[in-house]
Amino acid sequence: MMPSEQVHVNNHFHSEINGQRYYSTDIYGRPFMINNTYPTNHQAIRTVYIGNVPHNLSVNVILDQVKTGAIQAIRPLPEKNGLFITFVENIAAVQFFMEFTRNRNRFIIQGHELRIGWGKPSYLNTIIQTALRNGASRNVYLGLLDDEETEIDLKQELSRFGHIEHIKLLKDKRIAFVHFLCITNAVKCVNTLQTESRWQTKRVHFGKDRCAKNTTTITTSYTPFGYSIPYDPYTSPPMYSSPPPPPLTTTVTPPVHHDLLLLSSTLNNRLGGIANRTIYLGNLHPDTTAEDICNVVRGGMLSHLKFIPEKHIAFITFVDPILAEQFYHTTEYLVIKNRRLKLGWGKPSALTFQELYAVQNGGSRNVYIGNIDDSMTEEKLKHDFSEYGDIELVNALREKNCAFVNFTGIASAVRAIEGIRTKEEYKKFRINYGKDRCGNPPRFNTTTTTNNSSVHNDDDSLIPSTTLTTPTTTVLTPDDLIKFTS
Image 1 (cartoon, rainbow, N blue to C red):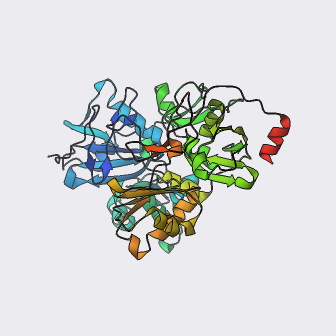
Image 2 (image 1 turned 180 degrees about the vertical axis):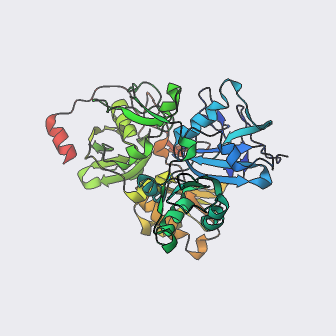
Image 3 (image 1 turned 45 degrees about the vertical axis):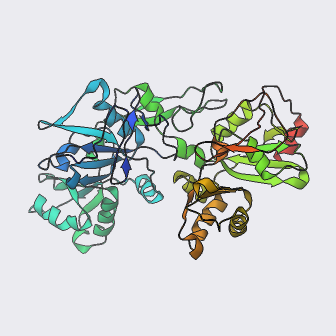
């Protein structure tokens, strides 16, 4: 019997099992939440949930049906009649899901109809990434085995490294393939056996994951999208400036719908490399504050704001270079305190490892403090948090018993969350990342005022009441550009 928290597939419902949230899909099989928005924590959805699994159906029998790509880990949940399968690549998870949901195909094994749903988004940690680059998989290849070796012997000896999903012994070739439930256990197995005397005369390496045996490599290229098209950096096809990038090679199982290729994640490569992600803002009014600047920037979350008031300039660095380019091309001009700003490009840069790691885990430059009491005033919060970095805005919502501390950079927010949680008076509060209001969609207003009043939307993100981005043309001279990038 399935538990009461059932997984709904191809409808507008979601549920949770052991903290895993499930999403419905659109016509292309792309997951979306109940409020019709895609997950915003910037991680790839690589986990598929299999439910309604009878107790007599083994994991290896289910995995016999998986041929779309290598698997990172399998997590059986026998008490809930289900299991999670986390693929190495997002595209493999999507293909597997689509095989049994497109055209209403049913996932039937030994007469049992299984249910399929999406697990929560996740990312490949650096340890797994390093292992994969060195050829690791959950399959361990053993060669030059003794003639008397049996599958039972191998299972008894190697089970010390973790649960084994499948063993295939070829006695005539004196080789065997041992599939663990996860890559981590296979890595432990290979590293340990290579140091033990019993295995010194034998071959111990990684083999190919049996769930990826039907893959071939095809090549496709992406077409740039115009900036007039609404763009979601985590669900829409990538956009590129001229010249276009070289063709992207992706491992998939043909036949495959072209939209599935567009789901293949290039986000980490884009965020981790050196790129034009910094915008120069010039001609700032002398009374301008960092809050004023963040109140008019929309379209992408920021990794850092460098404000130099004595020079009347600032540099805003976006997390995503694609959104920096979109901001530059779609925001013809900005006005703060009735003064029109100059826009230009700063120097190319890359996110630090700390920033990239934080973003992958839902981090931003905004810190959320929940369940606060009357003792937590904006002045006290600013005093307590200022030791971790420059603060752009402190905003307390008394009616909701929460507050937001917006730093000028993600790194400061990371230090703040790590540090403030260790202080005794803050241990009773909920401390987490909040939403960067600069990541809200751009707003196109036709009027502006000079005050700095602001309003709150339903998700407690601060939104300025005045942002002017009326289309017009700004011409920058070569001297301006030299000054901007110096």
